[in-house]
Image 1 (cartoon, helix red, strand yellow):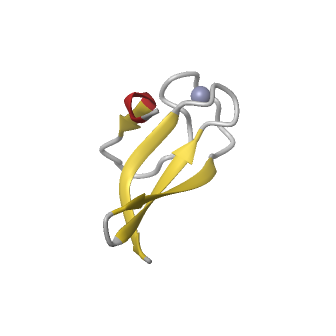
Image 2: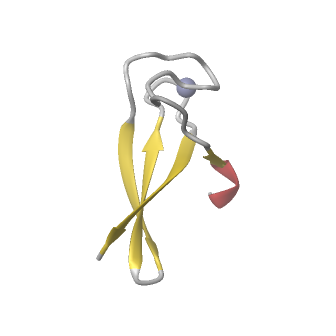
Length: 58
Ligand SMILES: [Zn+2]
């Protein structure tokens, strides 16, 4: 599943899907990453997963 995660270098905002251009925002998913949780975003239209580098403490 990790190969489906696309790393994003976020600019001003991240609202439109870079794969399918869906423009109404993203779903969230969380994944364990060592002592932290990774916060990943999922496009509701094409279901690609994006990693913007968000980490939250467990
Ligand atoms: Zn999409």
